[in-house]
Structures are given as structure tokens and as C-alpha cells.
Length: 69
Image (cartoon, rainbow, N blue to C red; front, side, top):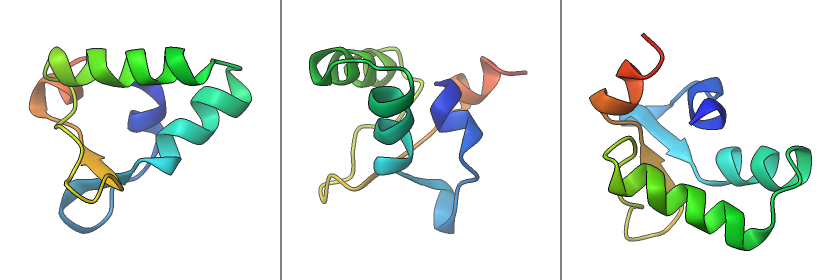
């Protein structure tokens, strides 16, 4: 969620998935399985919307924004 929050959303609040996966995998050194698990957990908890059908972006929900309020 910190990586999603760090990115300034564009057009309709979109957060491109590579803006989350790059720092999570390359900077935090998470495995692809940990990345997928974390992304799924954020979606299950309602912090992020499910990935768009193109699999290229998501949006932070109000619940996700409230984590940083």
C-alpha cells in the first residue's frame, strides 16, 4: 500500500501496476509470490480495486486512502 500511495494517480485515479511491482520486487526484494500475495491481500481487504481487465492498472479505494489519513 505504501508503494501505491507513493505514486501520484493519473487519469481517473489509475495506478499503473508496474509502479507498484517495481519497488516491491526490486527495492524491497520481495519474491514474485510475495508480491502476488500482497497484491491479492490488498484487493481482498478492499484497499485496492481488482486489476482492470487489461491487468495494467488498479485504483486505491477509499478504505485504502483511509489507511494513510
